[in-house]
Length: 380
Image (cartoon, rainbow, N blue to C red):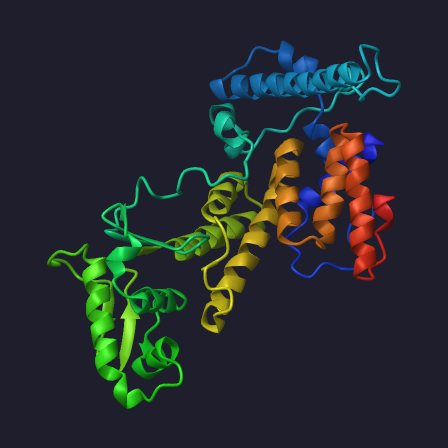
């Protein structure tokens, strides 16, 4: 059973990005190289005297990786014994293959998964907010945080609600952030801020809002540098060359990481960094604003693409537990994502977590029935 699961995960790890999955995705694929990924180190290789530091590191990594896999299986057996009241379970998890039975040579891991990075890469991505990505090293005097809770920071300090002095100033900033780098006609801005009111009476109001917003973004002091907020007789703009927007940073990081992934490179570091930047949907505080919807949907779609790539990259890097975490995050975004369901089921079974795998399979069948999709044969 486990060998078949390895073959399934190998196909998932090596396939390209699939934006439009076919109806028979997940059916059994031919084996590629995942069995070798989890195999013990070659005794002949270990016995040889390494000729270089790189060769020594390669040998040591293979040994350490195999021992880690064995330790995980031992932990599963101990959990099974404890759960059964001190007696070994009737169907304990399968232990790793013996070196004399499996001679597959371990593949050299990606740069992202080398031992010096293991502490950071193997950390379980918890659901909590964690440290603010980019907060410590941001050199921009003004930072706009729009993913999740809306917040504006000036010189590293959050702007309090009382400092805005006008809700319209906050709304103006949100509107401009929804169209990063693009000028918006003054008339359109006035229609959003004061819907239904005649434009001829709103010019002076907009001027007051612009002045208030500039003062807030300057930290309440006389501004000596360029303000991110610009306006002329025709348009209003937000210059992100002198400010930072977290949604723009996320999209840039995601584009770079997905590009590396699609070219077949190891991109676990880049993808994980982009994933950490996404702390929630764009402007969650404005769920019904039509002007916020396009960027919100675009950012969310890219986040899902990043998670799909992370599952494949984690499986390729022989980290099934990490891949499980990302598959679960995918299902939090979309409970009907068939790829995520199949990955989760296979990964859990590969790790010997058969009870969780059964529940995941039952949930998959339920979700597919709800939308009238025939379950894939590979999940049976």
